[in-house]
Image: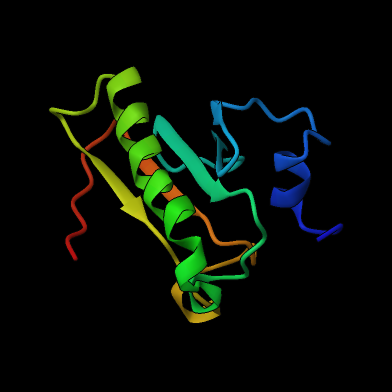
Length: 113
């Protein structure tokens, strides 16, 4: 999608720092971080939300978790911990309608789900 900010990042049309990119997913820093480490991991294909996911997207979704693990290792938070969040829809707090996973770490997070 031309207007989607995450699609523009995936295509290299912004000056966003890319932490990881392959043929399935891209990871980059969140522009409004809520913790010392706050990254977004997105599928390269535009999916509006989890509600748009189909069986053909399983490889990209699995890769999102593999990349989360790699980020945890790179930033040395595998032991201290990190949080992965996917918001789906406006009531859940989704503000950019391109499926994305928040990787949040670097501080204690008292909220429990």
